[in-house]
Image 1 (cartoon, rainbow, N blue to C red):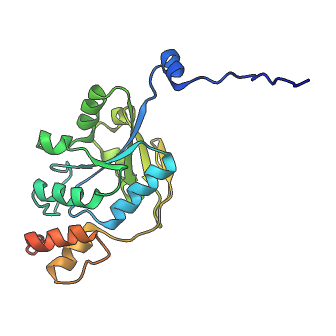
Image 2: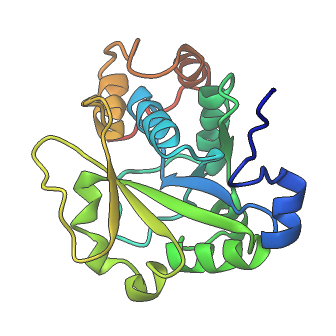
Image 3: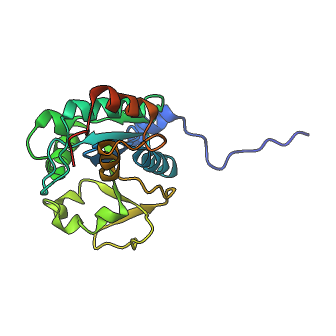
Length: 215
């Protein structure tokens, strides 16, 4: 006689699960910065976080004006956004969040996250920062309130200890030593940036004549 096996834990369909527990919360990574310009190190970091944490999407969020004193000489937002669009094309996990550009003024992350959480209460946000930026968190505007709105994700980097007085989710990523400051100097002194930025970004910089007069 054939023995019939009975499931101890019955299978619950996704529809039934949503009816019982509500829809699953979306998990979105936010990668903020000036991106002046965006480079391959940014993309590698974002890809590592997205895949390791299994996030639904990584949104690059260019700031309008950093709150700290900034001598970067950031070019116009339209050019930084255009380069980001070129850099992320072809990766379905990547997207843009232009809240800070549209709002204008000084870009305080607390204000941004408060607005995004109100617009998308079903979303869990993971804010990505490099290990070198973790030490600056105590200086961030309303950091004690900000850590209640997002989960900070710190990307490990050689020479920086993965420690912080604030809750940080640490992830590993390939060590790619590229900086936007370095790229701007290379462009200004007519050195190659091939393989440091996506080809489409390099072509855009050349076509628009960007960073030739910036320090």
